[in-house]
Image (cartoon, rainbow, N blue to C red; front, side, top):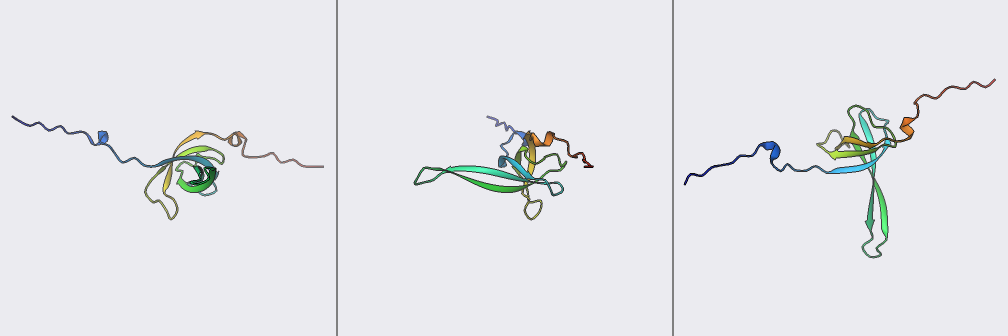
Length: 110
């Protein structure tokens, strides 16, 4: 009997999934970098009370498209700098604050 080998393309093979997190943008003051705050909820092992803890992640934003208050999804990536190990995947929800115009009119009092 002749054996036949079936090869699967590289794209169809199970690629290692990279970690994704959803959080709120708290700072966009750096160029091509955003700071995303993730809120984690965990029950206390003994008292069963739900505790909240926050952690900030630095993420790469190539187009500087995210704004403060946006809900974003970030994905783990190779180290891009000393603190940046995440990249912006998508903006899930825009902040209502970002809909406001950036410039405020100057009012002159007489």
